[in-house]
Image (tube, one colour):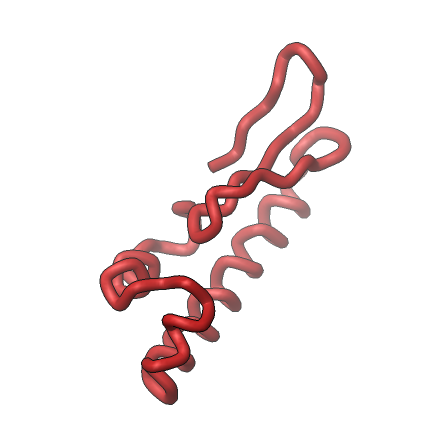
Length: 79
């Protein structure tokens, strides 16, 4: 989820898998949007590989099988 704070004028990117938010400096541009999409694609590819090759490792990163399945069904533009 992308959030813009009117009080601080900063952009925030909330990570769905951790619930943490990261501040982004400056306006969101097309380039940064594409970069965000690429990170999501890469993250979901790695998550799929991890769930296939070592499902027991999901506990190590604090995710349930259901959370992984939900994340993998999302299109790249959805957080």
